[in-house]
Length: 391
Ligand code: GAL
Image 1: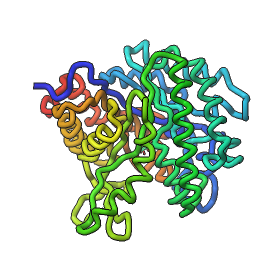
Image 2: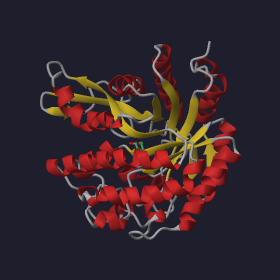
Image 3: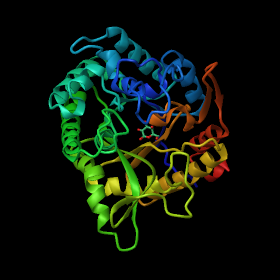
């Protein structure tokens, strides 16, 4: 008895700024070097995936992944407004080709949190011109890479770009508590996604969607009516923007709790992971169910994982998480794939390198890679389609 049907797409995900190294021309690099931000350390050389991608893809192939989800670094492709780098596009073409040479698909994300410095300097996601700027870049990149792309995500977690950038002040531009700026960013991110879909569709024959940061939502007793109040702007704004897309990408890690006054922290007694939120392995299941219900679209879990130095805990999380994903499939939901976050321990944004989300450890002095037991565990599930087979 297998838990996952033949043809279920198994992948792993990274993002350019978190793994490539040397992405000095975007707003994140600037943010990392701005005194007083929440960033604990700069991204620096990261894990040098820019140069080491062939060896990293060899590891993925060895583990049995069918797809690699990675992002294009806009600031490399368009270092100054309207000035495009064919060398950068050549690089990403080589990454796609390297996936194909290893029998893997290339799932390409066009925006994963980072915006070129020049676009950030003229207002970023609060300047209506960002939509045309983003589309100009998507057009150029898609025209070049589109014929060989297998699946495309327009924008990664637009709801995190807006909420952490304009409400929490933890992501660039570091604005805290500006509701109007937040709503404007949401509107522009939705507009950018909507405008990117037909551009991508015209550039090749592959499914196109957006990925949304989602959670399992719960209320303290008596605060149930607060769930929609907080969930609607954060999740529904983007789930509702998927009309006509080919899929919705669900990214889920934990549970979100609300009380009468709004978002509250972990429930006493529930394990807390290094990221400071609850260990909640049914987040993926709950989020997949809700995304399917709200959008009516096929679902890919485009990110799920755990930041931990305790690799057996990662296996436990994965096991419970995948059981949840398997339940959605058993219930007849159209769930087509699972991408684990992440292949490598990498730059976890403001938290830096302390958070270890990888199936593969990296020694950042030598850049040596070490495959963890959790990777072997997942490889066995992917090989057999059965969670129990992996032990
Ligand atoms: C997501 C994000 C990834 C990664 C992950 C783990 O929100 O898309 O870039 O950081 O969380 O926290």
